[in-house]
Image: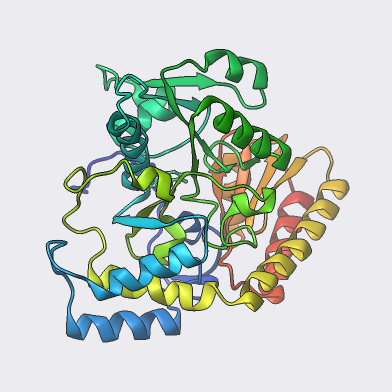
Amino acid sequence: MSSILKIYNRRKISFKKGKGSFLYSTSGKKYLDFVQGIAVNCLGHSNKHLIKKINNQSKKLWHVSNAFQIPEQEKLAKRLTQNSFADYVTFQNSGAEATEVAIKFARRYFYSKGKSKKNRIICLKGSFHGRTLATIYASGSKKATEGFSPKVDGFDHFSFGDHKSLEKIITKRTAAIMIETILGEGGIKVIPDFCLRHLRKLCNKKNILLILDEVQCGIGRTGKFFAFEHAKIKPDIVPIAKGIGGGFPLGACLVNKRVASGIPKGSHGSTFGGNPLAMSVGNAVLDIILKKKFQKKVQESSKYFHKNLNKLKDQYPNIIKEIRGMGLLIGIQLFEDNTKFIKKLFENKMLAIRAAENVVRILPPLNVNKKEIDLAMEILAKVCKNYK
Ligand SMILES: *Cc1c(COP(=O)(O)O)cnc(C)c1O
């Protein structure tokens, strides 16, 4: 009898080790891992550089309070700002926390500017921003909020692609629009560049802050450091997590100067956020991700994978409806049931995970090689061929 609270539907398998794109089960089987902890292990399992850096740091200093200077934190913040729209960074331990900080900062900014009633945030229906009280009400999902009332107020919602209703729900009280640049849990739905640019303009016109949740799609996942860079726009606030920790719990909220000007000392904090151990991993991840060649390689892998996936779709038009996503954030939308399809992949030693809209999510490590993509294609083709 397990003493773990049953809030997950777990597959009956556990693993003893991982290496790159592969996981080895306790019973000795080898799996192609294209879940990677849900886009967390951006450099795969047991990355040598990450191991070296965390080992070195673990012998020196794990944790000190944010009451003191933390040079490793200075370094990671500097690198995040030098490589993005942001001017300042504050660290958390997870995606939900980082997103919740984004919500807090948007409200706090207008409060500082004497507009305390400008505190509502507009979000997209079917989005995902985490599982804290505020973030479940931000996404507004019926399932995630069920039984957790009274509701956290302050969120208004519009539907994907419904620009008209978006403009209608904007009021003088709207402080921010918060969306995932690419909806992850929501089905790997890419917000088109022209929409992002329109959104930026709309926010400028109405004095609204633009929050782009890049917890899943950021940190090189799409072949650029941030997914919004493809649209050549600059948001005001960006929560990140998942990939930046490479498997270690790490989140951060990035802001521009304007937002920072409304966030006074003492208005937020975290015990663990930004401790030296976490920072050593974050810095080690950036050592690799920020190389120009690395991003190019992600783009090439992506192109190759998408090309082959689209071929498969043409071959099995009754099974596969659409190939979605960008970079190595990939969704296969099916006509067939996604859970059943994922089970068949699993039986063929490939791990994938669901997303909404009957999508199978494929999240390889960013340093995946061609041989591993070929193996995934082989398994996908086999499952399609024998589909019953
Ligand atoms: C995963 C995710 C979160 C929540 O991150 P946790 O670390 O699970 O709290 C928030 N936003 C997006 C877009 C995510 O994909």
